[in-house]
Length: 93
Image (tube, helix red, strand yellow):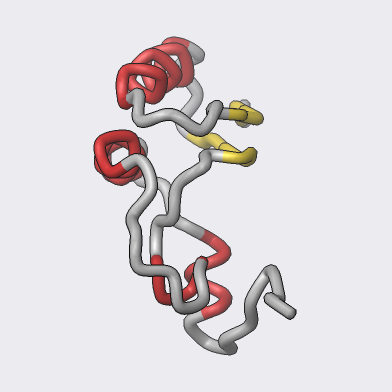
């Protein structure tokens, strides 16, 4: 079985076309399984990923990532795990 492993770093800009290109490249590998990790500079689940933060960063890029996850049948593993046990990846002092 072949697995596509992709590490993505998206600069902090609202550029959904970045993810459209990335999705096309990942699909072109032709593997039925893929793991995508990295720094997307977006919040997928604001209640889990932020603390008392009201603004949604990069809303168009965020929508593209959510669409990409649906197209590739991907899970947001941090969200899957943390909905069972709420923890934050940061702490404001």
